[in-house]
Length: 260
Ligand SMILES: [Zn+2]
Image 1 (cartoon, helix red, strand yellow):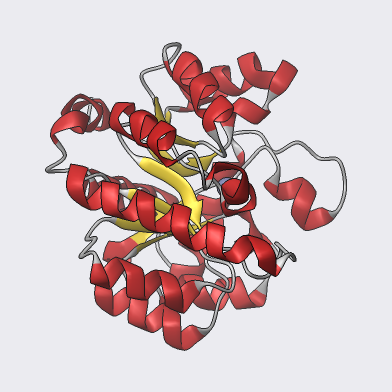
Image 2 (cartoon, rainbow, N blue to C red):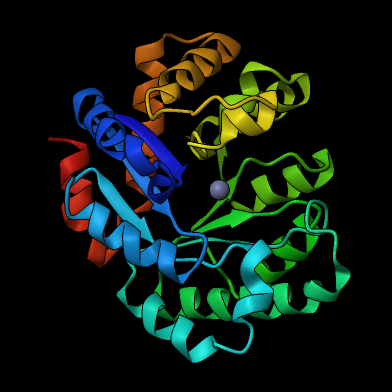
């Protein structure tokens, strides 16, 4: 089974039916990450339409400033969510430094809850890589997915040593630096994502809507880079995701569906 461990399914609008159809036809297990509260509420409804969709609550660092005074509301939604994300820090694309303390506060709230409720986290780390690793270590978070890593190689290696998982996405088709990152990640920590529908549009600066089947191109590119067959690579990613959720009591049904 294909694994897309970071997707914004609520952003498909009129193409949602087609996206869900592709997920079912191609058997793509999908972690549907939220950007904020309305996004999560929509993902909960979408997830009722497919057993292959896992809704995940998070507040994206871009939205953190709007939620910093609403932590108890956030807490209520975390309790209902089987996983956590998209959360993180962004000190690169988010230009206003006045939002940075709010980003840290919201992120730490989620990390503390992840620790308490033993849920895996899905992290955006742009220019906050070291801070995030420090936070994972201080809260002893063992199940973290670092999404679309593009930071320095020394922090990448430290995150690998710590045991973070990494989702490689569509940028591996275009960037030599991402290819180098993809080659550095050891077999047992490698996962795949699309970050669609927006990833291709963002990368290519056009209006291309990325559909779920883009995950197949990511798998092909990684198989080629690592000199294994597509089937082997697909099996490796599936086994890694199954290990990530192996002892998660709320995800046993999901785990069974991965192997059905
Ligand atoms: Zn994302």
